[in-house]
Structures are given as structure tokens and as C-alpha cells.
Image (cartoon, rainbow, N blue to C red):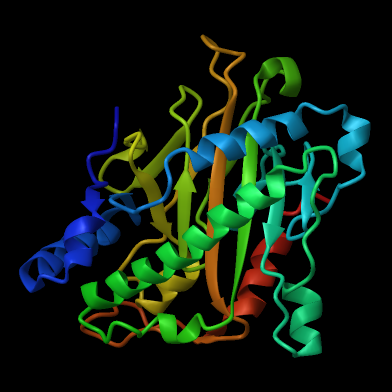
Amino acid sequence: MVSSQVPVIDLGPWRSGEPAARSRIAAQVDEALQAAGFLLVTGHGVDPALPARIREAARAFFRLPPGAKELYAVSVGGRGWLGPGAEANSYAEGTASPPDLKESWSCAAEDPTGVPSVDAEWFRPNAWPAEVPRLRPLVAEYLTAMRALSDELLELLAVALALPQDHFTRHTGHPTWGFNVNWYPGTEVVGEPLPGQFRIGAHTDFGTVTVLDRERGAGGLQIHTDAEGWQDALWDPAALTVNIGDLLARWTGDRWRAGRHRVLPPPAHAPAEELISLVYFYECDAHTRVESLPAPVGRVAHEPVDSHVYLRAKLDAITVP
């Protein structure tokens, strides 16, 4: 079954500035994020041909011999190739599982802040595969669109909470972010899944908002809600999938749910299925103090956290030793 708790939000009326339309969309968003932590977003303005071009270039890299990819091997949070067995996302929830059945090309924020300790950890230069030179300019174009869209979404989310529009974006002047091109090959590459093994194990994301461009697949995205349990995520070819992460859920005092999700392993009836997802993880300025909104908006008063101490602990948790 497909989850019924994820609405499709058209950003066109929001961008129109018409007060009644903006109020209606804000109410829809508030309701959806309380239930599932997920939205589908249309009217986003991202060139629909761009993700396909990125997938084509990324596929050329992922299909290189392992020895060629090893030149770019990194650990979780690095800039380069995350090979098989590098991640097990279920550990972020404290659940042991076999490693995730995927490979990723990863990049992240790199424009330095001028603070040496921050830059050394969070704003290092990205690497790019010399074998596929067209990947870098395509990703750069996409990342520009993702940064602008993520800030727009954070403005919408602030209004949905009846807060000033810049309540969150005042903390994204020089933010960290991560971007993964996730390759989910079939069993001819990854082998038969082990018990409890997924393309990505059950988890919530760690930052503020995640923007996902995904392909439809039998071994695809599922989301979890209290009302429906695990259900296939709604798919719309014109939509981007948006979910909120742990930091934003804490910020709202758990009014909104961090979107819990997983990616199914290659299906038995289609073992050769191959999917590529483009995943943009947006965060905030380094070492932002994240403090829960008080009641009646917030529902749980979490202890304040340093955003990037929190993020580092989560990245370490999902790293397979």
C-alpha cells in the first residue's frame, strides 16, 4: 500500500504571495509534518532534465572497475566515493543491521568560513572523478537550486508555525549541507540481501530538511507513521520528496516528526532493478544552538544541542568500522 499521509504541495500558490493561498498551504504542511514528516513538492522550478543528466554521469562512474573507484574512497562524511559496506543507517536508531546495499558519490559544503577549526571539519574541498568530468558542473547547477529551494522551504515551515519567516533561515547564512548520489544496483552487484539488510536501513535524517529526487522502483522508498506502519512512499514524476530531520524536529519541540524511512532491498521479482537517488541534506550554520520551541507550539522541551556536535555523533554512528 501507499501511505496516505504525505500530501502533494504545489509551491506555485505559495510563491504568488496571495495571503489566503499561503495560509492554506501552511496549514497543510503543519498537518502533514505532524503525521509523517514528509511532503511531496511540485512547482519547485528545478529543471526536470537536470536530474536525468546527473544520473547518466553518475552511472558512468559507478560502473567503473572497483580499482578505479577506490582512488576516491572516503568514509561517511567525506567527499568522494562511499563504497559497499561503508554505511549502516539503522545504527542511527541504535539498531544493528548488515551494511546498506548501496554505493554513493558524496560532496558537501566547501566554501570556508574563516574559522580554521570549523573549516577543517565541515568545509573541506570536494573531490571529483577525473573519469567523468561532466559530473561536476551538473552537480554544481543542481546544488545551487537545492540551496535556494531549501531556504524557501524553511521559510514556509516557519510560517506554518506562525513564526517570523526568517526564524530558521537566520541560521543558514553559511550553512553546512551534504549531497549524495546514491546508487542502488541489483543483486548481480550486491548479492542476495542478508536478513534485515536494506538498500538503506530504517532511520531519520539528521539535519533540517532533506530534498530527494528519486526514481520509482519496487525496491524503493518506504515511510513509517504511527497510523499506518511501513508503507510505500507516494511517487509523482513532477515532485521532489521533502522530509524533515532530527534537528528541525527538536527545534519544533517534536510538534513535527522527523521522517522515518528506509529503502527496500532489490526485490525478488526484479533482482536486477537499478535505481539512483539524488539526496540533498540541508543543515544550518555551524554550531547553531538548537532550542525547542515552547508550548503551545512545541510539545517536548528537549535539552538544547549544538547542531554540529549532534550531527557529528550521528555520522559517526552510521559508519561501519
